[in-house]
Amino acid sequence: MAILTTILISCGNFLDVNPKNVLSENEAFKPENLEEFVTAAYAYLPSQYFATTQNTWVHGSIRSDDAYKGGDGITDQSQMYELELFVPVTPNLLWNDGLWFEGYCAISRCNTALRLLNDVDVTTFPKKEERIGEMRFLRGYIYTNLKLYWKYIPYADENVPATSEAYEAIPNRDKSKPNDLYIWEKILEDFKAAETKLPEIQEDKGRINKMAAKAMVAKVLLFMAYEQNDENQVVNINKNRIEEALKYINQITEREGDLVGLCADFAENFLPDFDNNTKESLYETQYSIDDGSNAGKTNRGNELNAPWSVGCCDFHKVSFNLMNAFRTDQKTGLPLFDTFNDVELKGRYKSYFSENTFDPRMGHTVAVPGLPYKYKTDLIFDSTGARTPIVYGYLHSMKEQVDPDCSCIYKPFFTYNSMNAKNIRYAEVLLWKAECLIQLDREKEALPIINKIRQRAANSTGRLKNGRLTVNYKIGLYEDGVNCDWTKEFAMKALQWENRMETACEGRRFFDLQRWGILEPTLNAYFAKESRRYSWLQKGHFTKGRDEYRPIPQPQINWAKGNYTQNPGY
Image (cartoon, rainbow, N blue to C red):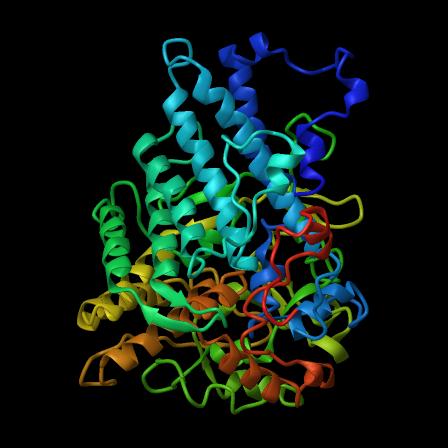
């Protein structure tokens, strides 16, 4: 927040100077100008780079068992290397401060818009309440990301005076509170307020609607339900929170077929032709090209992620662990929960694929040498897509990539594209519903929901044409008493597995493990096995009670003059 206040306040020497290109107070209250302040808040998210809150592949994929950093060896973007190994991570970690700063810059834009909207009369600006709902959603969304990264964060709304003293005085941790739930409560209040103000359908594509707000209410309640102690360990699952989350989820699912629904083909979630054009996507970050600006609002957060053969710079590599997780039982098509990681890919590439069956979502998630790239039958992905295969292998994350011939690409050197980021998918909402039902001891009701997700995956092979490599896709449904014993324990295991398969490499994995309280056993088991495949992973170690969250950035602690408390272990 240190640099943020320089945006909000001016130095005394300039107070008597009429600034240029700044709206006067009277001009700001014109309806067309109020809209500009709202647009400015929307516009900040797609302007962010891979070091910021919006692009969670850095924060949620490579810090989990889904992916490796990639690039030109471990010294290329070494801060990512530190993040994925959790050693050494310090309060002075590069990007840590920038991540915090960018988040609060985005919040500042929301607060500026809200201050103006609160003071305008609805007769002057009929869209007042609706736009307030949009800004409260955006503010809550950014705060949610910050909360998941650092746990204890300062919360500033539009009522905080825009002065350095006011911002410095807000602690990141209120010592009078027993835990962090009071911060969640403030975020939840934003989403609940947004939900009451937003319409179900927006005339302008890209604007936030009521379904997105309901989904974020449910998501926050779900995270709140897994209550943590001061050592970041889950000590209680609050059933009242789960019940409330389920209430909001049911309000979404009861509109299935009308306002929400699953895409017929899983692939449609990751193709630019379907931006703002499916019932599955409840909230998207809007990217653009050929919009009148020099470079467009393309996705700079994925600028390093194109394979080496089609761009730069081969970051975000799929782990062997995730690749093996896509394997299925050859008879039932069910996951190999306990034995999935017992086979090796290195040194036996063709036999690995001929001897195993796979969940079809593998073909949508992983760029595999020998298979068509991004559904192009005339473009077979090959080993030239890997920049340093001896370090990171040949498997590449593909969901964020587009057809190399797409008009949505801007390529001055790095490879940018304008495909929207799908931040909330209806498939996730269904999985949250299944999770709620399981935690409420209604696991039998969760079974058809999970099967519904799996059936969609089974139906999504039309674009997965074979290339030089033959892959056998096989996925089965759970049948209680036939191929499984659907107890609460088994149902939770199936739910957690389904979450990973459905959202792999979308930046969700770390935070799911965080919510469930199983980061330490999952990641240390991952390091133990994966380090035998790649020696650079031998330094990896997850420290329980520390690594669930990042350190509070040291520059922010310095700026806050003692009002910030560092997280445990740092």
